[in-house]
Length: 167
Image (cartoon, rainbow, N blue to C red):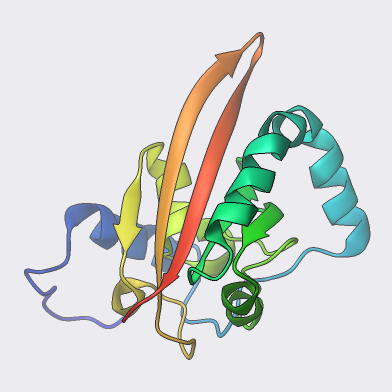
């Protein structure tokens, strides 16, 4: 992170995310880290209730988002992409930077990004590509929405991620 003046257009949550990312040693990565197969299986098993509850919605979203330039990602509360649905062309573009099953999108893994920042804040946020620390990727805009609901002793995060190509 460079030392200097912060542009007035940078919102406070994004600035705070930059600071958290800098203190974690995250600078600028070309793609999100990807889990190994055994780690992904463990994350998916841990989130089996979330995945089961979201299955019908993901199937419907996949149908509705086909040929729209949009996709839906179901992520764990640690920012790991568990399932993907939607437009195949957009999914292919997302795979270029690990925006697919097994990609790790927490702030501590990749730095400032909409998924990780929204998980940290526990509320929806939009982070424009030029504000994210991820560099060298297609012009994509990420929006992340989270609905936090408590279940017995744990909190399940019902997450929805939308990736749309900027036009």
